[in-house]
Length: 140
Image (cartoon, rainbow, N blue to C red; front, side, top):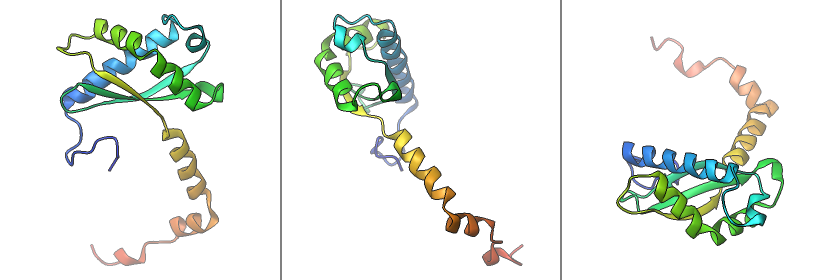
């Protein structure tokens, strides 16, 4: 189970829908360099995912600079410095009662994907995958 959604049943459809709308809005704002911070506008940042709290008051935004153009922590610092303006842009794009508080975190999805590929390319794992499954012989 993902750590991003602490409830056992996972996020609701509303949380997923609002998270995706926030992700698109932030991506558009960052892509068009609409923020009044030249340092942030010079960065190419990917918004990988946004997860919302059940009450939709907190949105955790998972970001990654494109092609490692800047350190992840520098991008998160720049985003956090401009959180109020980004929150205002999100609020104008959504019809929610409250504008969610934005929290920026590094997106580690790609790191986990690389590690999974490395594990699957291991010769021992390849041998085990090619081996016929003897536990299920004759069960059916």
